[in-house]
Length: 280
Image 1 (cartoon, helix red, strand yellow):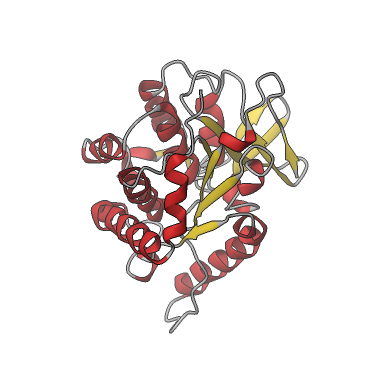
Image 2: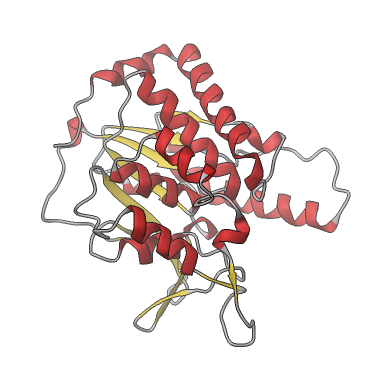
């Protein structure tokens, strides 16, 4: 594990509120509902960390896009159809079934400055370094779109992202809840885990077994990050949908929104965070 920090502009810890967004494919659309509900209650995170889909949503939020604007992107076919994000290639020539062309172009379109430093909120992206076999955090530089793509590079599905002689893939492979990136800079961390552990009722197909096995692995690698979160929100869209339910984006968004409203009602102390100052 390696955390790469920007040492030139250290944030003020007592003013920083962190939001950690897990990976989870289409289930990550629940993050948008969570953001909507938090902001309606005056809770405005200043620092964002994410893996995989959490990195994509986190980057858009860090750039200043509202939940409504993100939902509009989905409706405009920019963010949800897996066929839009996958650009298939000859498998014997590439390191994955698909290139990152569509996602790369999307990030370039909506965040044209392509810079961590120019984002409106501090952003930390979790990736996995295949050379070292460890997860890393990237939070600076002018290759934002490259690192967002790397964090969402599902092994075997998307091409690996190469930087020099080093290969990078999906951050969720080794750390699906990278709250460690926020620990030093934030006095409080809110976590959103869209793949909480669920006991399977029946495993009727090999794909069911594979899905639950991957989720169990992700739950294990999320434990440390989950424990760092003072508040942990767990939308239950996973009980109705799965990681490739991209067409159900509105219902998954609603799961995130409803889970957050319930969480605030059950944990009213979180409303004290509405007085946290925004990052200058």
